[in-house]
Length: 210
Image (cartoon, rainbow, N blue to C red; front, side, top):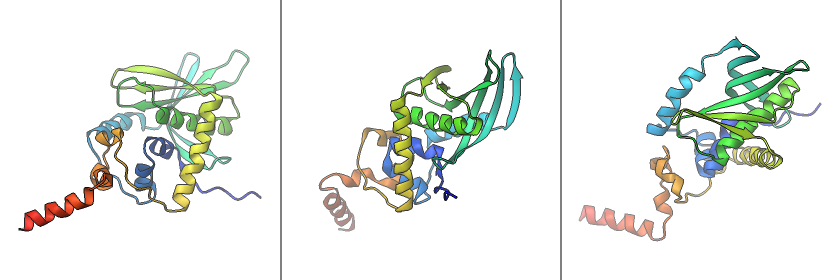
């Protein structure tokens, strides 16, 4: 019997591609704080996270569907999965993820959705060639095609996250453009990575006590 892999949350794929240190703070250190961006996302998912199934002509819709992929050790939950009836019989699963921002392509969002597709392919034994991301900020839906390159990126990131968690490793802080809207900025302190930051901090403490 093949031993089960250490589980990797589907959401960690997104976090790791956005920022490896943020992923470690959440999934290794257990740290998470809210800001306006994460709160908006939480409110959006309150609607999507109500489990249930509804049927429309030619499509069955499942909300808050639990996901698992034993081959990759993935676990998670899909906001919504559409099961489209096929002319030859059977159904084709189409994962739909909800994002609070405006319509824009990001590799981390696409890889998270691709991870959901990999779970669905194993769970239902059906090909999942594409999915969609609904961007609430612009009320538009964007199709994501699960190309070989995207699948490779997703599987590679799964293993990178697993190694990060297994090693309990916290990557060093690095000031990057995405730090601007990060809810963990006050915990991460990326500004401290700048040359001379420690000396400036020590000087400020000295001046304050003088």
